Amino acid sequence: MSLPVGVIGVGAIGRNHARIYAELPTADLIGIYDADFSRAQAVAAEFGTVAVADLDDLISRVAAASVSTPTVTHREMATRLLSAGRHVLVEKPIADSVDDAKAMIDLAQERGLVLQVGHIERFNPVMSQLEARLNSPRFIECHRLSPFPQRSLDIGVVLDLMIHDLEIVLHLVDSPIAAIDAVGIPVLTRREDIANARIRFENGCVANITASRISPERLRKIRVFQSDAYLSLDYQDQSGWIYRKDGMEIAREEVEVEKDEPLKCELAAFVDCATKGSQPKVGGSEGAAALNVALEITRIIEAAN
Image (spheres, rainbow, N blue to C red):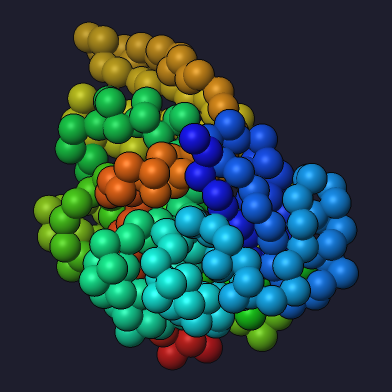
């Protein structure tokens, strides 16, 4: 039996949530809600569902929902859903403050509900290849560049884009942070549009992370160096290479990746967790940890500007 789901907020990201739910055999897209009802109607017509003018009406009809509204509304929307006993997938960042994130996490735990955070790259097929080959990362380098998005302008590039890589790095390194250096520059908005952070962990690993939303090109790559190998993976192309020492030479081996759409994998996993009541791969705690580091980086940048 398919899970009755809804989508709250159908901008650029939410529209894709609606598209995939409409395609998933394990989900039944009951309806969508957006503050702009005409937009909700257009998206509903596109994907064969209904636009609901009253949010509480939608909540009463579903067992789970995606929240793809502006970050400042995430706590309010998630609270309304969780209080009604509904499972929630909230887009990243989980909230605009750690206190709001904690309140959402506590409520989900209290009600025994799934709270998943939309860190999509954890569901990219290249991640399983990286995790299978990783043992003790010593240096990680991430680049995430995109043209100006005309969306998410209520937050800077750290909370918009870099937070993806922050969550991944925290997951891969699994060590407390010892120090952070960061720099960021506002270009087209009042917040930072390009930023770099260098994070040193207590176990000695160092991560260098760059994010830009003013680049002429799109780039989403991660490179991980460890004692026995160097892995270079491309999230965008879902491809990669592993380099190993072979005597006094470096041997290169292509990483075989079974390509798939990360958002489809993410939403399918959410539906599965909501159906079974199991723990999501990226739950509220993981989302809050990434948010905490992103806010600290933002604070460092703002203090310097």
